[in-house]
Structure formats: C-alpha cells, structure tokens
Length: 457
Ligand SMILES: Nc1ncnc2c1ncn2[C@@H]1O[C@H](COP(=O)(O)OP(=O)(O)OP(=O)(O)O)[C@@H](O)[C@H]1O
Ligand SMILES: [Mg+2]
Image 1 (tube, rainbow, N blue to C red):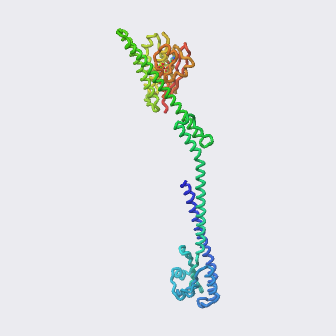
Image 2: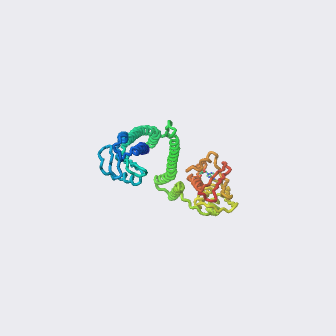
Image 3: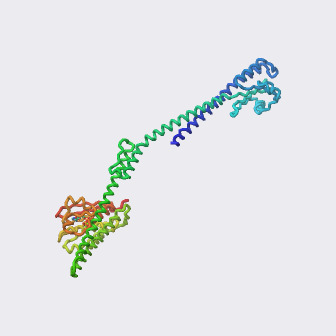
C-alpha cells in the first residue's frame, strides 16, 4: 500500500517541480525580451538626445525614471571611462564600474543578459553607440521577485493537490483492498475450519467468482485426500484382519494341545505341522505386503534393461511345472515372435508369475494353461488362458483390489492372500502397460497384458 502511494506521489512532486521551473524560465525570458524592447527605444532616445554629452536631458531622465519604476529595478549609464554618469538609485554616480558585464559589453559592442536565480533579478547591458563606436553602456537590473513568488505559489498549490490526492488514494486503496481481500479471507477461514476438523464436507464460498477456482481445486484435493485416507484405513484393517486369521488358528491349535493331558506324539506332530503352515502363510503375506509397499512408493525404482521376455516366461513355467504336474495340469508356451523389451526384468517376472500361478491355482484337475507371447512394433503382448473355474462377472472389477479374494477361492480353501493381482497391476502400470481379463465361470479365464517395447519417460 505504502509503495503504491509512493508510486503515485513521486511523479506528482516531479511534475509540480517541472511545471514551476518551466514557468519560471518562460516568465524570465519574456521579461528579458520586454526589457530589451524598452531599452532599444531608450537607446534611440539616448542617441538622438546625445545624452552622454547632455546628461540633463529631461526627456531621457524622465524615461529612465519611468522604466526603473515599471520594472522595479535600477538603471545606470556608464561612460567610456567606466564612470557611472547616471544612476536611478543615485548612489553610484561618479564611481567607477568595472563589472564583468560592463567590460564585456564595451569590448564586444554587444549587450549581455544574466539571470541571478538566487537573488531573483536579471542584469542586462546594452551598448550606447555613436557612429558605430561604443561610447557608453546602459546597465539595467530588473527584479524578478514576483516571478519567483508566482512559481513558489504554483509549487505550493501542486504540493497541496498532491497531499490531498495521496490522502484520497490512501483511503480508496484501503477500502478497495478490503473489498478485494474479503473473498480470500473467507476462503482462508473455510480452509482453516476444514483443517481444524470442524467440517467434514467440502468448503463453499459461493458469493464470489474470484475464488471459485480456488475452492474447486481445494475441494478436489480434499476429496482425493479423503479417498486416500479411507483407502489407507481399509488397507490397515485388511492387513490386521488377514494377519489375525493365521494367528487365531495357531492359537486354537496351541490351546487345544495345552488343554489336553497325555497328548500322543502323533497329534503333537500333526498340530505342529499345521502351525508351521500358518507361519508360512503369514510369511508369504508379509513378503507380499512389503513388495506392494515398495511398488506403492511414488518413485519406485525401476531397473530398466533390455530383457528377453520369453526367457522370463520359460523360467516361471519351469518353476510352476512340478505343482501343475501334481494335478495333471498341462502348461504350454507359444512364442509367436522373439521379444526383447526395455523393462524391469524382476518386476515383470513378479507380475507374470502371479498371473501364471493363478491360472494353475484356480484350474481344474487335468486342465490346461496356455501362455502366448506376441509383439508388434510398439508393444508386446502376453496372453495367459486357462481351463479353470473362471471369475464371475461381478467379481471381475474387484480382483485387482488388495486382499480381494473370489468367493470360490475362500470356499475351496485355495491358499492365497489376495495381494497377487494388486501387485501385478501395480507393476504393469509402472511399466506403462495395461491388463484386461476375459472370463466365464466354469469355462476358464484369459488375462491379456500389453506393455510398450521401449520405455518412454
Ligand atoms: N486365473 C484365474 N481363474 C479364476 N479366478 C482367478 C484367476 N486369477 C485370479 N482369480 C480370482 O481373483 C482373486 C484375486 O487374485 P489374486 O492373485 O489377487 O489373489 P490370490 O491368488 O487369492 O492370492 P495371492 O495371489 O496373493 O496368493 C482370486 O482369489 C481369485 O478368486
Ligand atoms: Mg494369486
């Protein structure tokens, strides 16, 4: 605000100064030319009256008196011997005058003019010539007091106007700032209310268009934060629940052993095996959780390198084959083209192995799993189909959620945490790819993955 007023005031002051100065200059030069005119007439009379030899000329003397009166100044005439012969102030008669102006006028035969700004007067000299010879000098000093007074008056007026204007500006600025800031204050209060937790819904400051965008953006951010918060809560409660289940069964097993007397060793062994299984399950889950947390981090570190995708798939199949063989499930792999892609090999392996593992896990005995690898110029495609139990339509949109497990998987007691596809999806998204599922209950499922061959940043 102060800066604004300064920006307003400084030019005002400068303008006032410039105006008063140019007025002064103009008035002084007008005064000079009017004095010069009068003096030219006077010089003609001096010449015609031969004044220097006839100092008593009444015509000239009265004209001198009149002029000095009109201009509120003093007129002196100096003869060839630098002697003052006439002085309207009657103080210097008979004295010698060798002032700079007089000497220069005698020497050059030209008049001079000098403005004394400080003492407010103009000194002018004019040569008195007889037959082109300078025989004397007319010296006139004219007061410019009233010009200076007028200029000062002008300055004062200007200053008064400036002061009044800045005062008005100050008040106007204050009022305007108040009006402009008000909507933002309201928004700030509304945001503060939300931060303090008074309000659980979106903020609303409907009366001002200026803040509409801010409130909209804030509300969008707020709803995202709330969504994140609720997903975090879901996650925590899911994790606790999932970790509690194996703990509960371990406790039941241990309690039942503790509650019995003379327990046969076989029973001990059996229960202990169950407990070990539960511990394995927990371990698996914690491992999956850690993987997911790592993938979740915004700047998940990707180790991008040229990777032979078929090689990864073959390794996964090799690992899963013994499990599949036990249930008579055949796994086949068809490589349409060789694919070398810029991907994070270990993360891709994680994603694909979850998919192939599911295809085996949710299959029927003596079923099949087919993996197909193809590519065009931009992407490579991995398609995993199985002859398994399939996924009902209504479950399909949930399978990528953390801890989501299909109804069948619960009821048929197939091991799993429900984190597998969540991890798979995260990896594929990180690799800028997409995943789609096609499935019918009882007929099997097909998962299609498409990932760019070249990593685009
Ligand atoms: N190929 C498939 N056939 C039938 N159902 C499937 C198939 N793949 C996934 N599902 C269903 O999707 C659910 C989620 O799969 P996801 O891989 O995320 O978890 P999971 O296999 O149960 O556990 P995890 O993989 O963490 O051990 C499964 O419980 C299952 O119901
Ligand atoms: Mg799985």
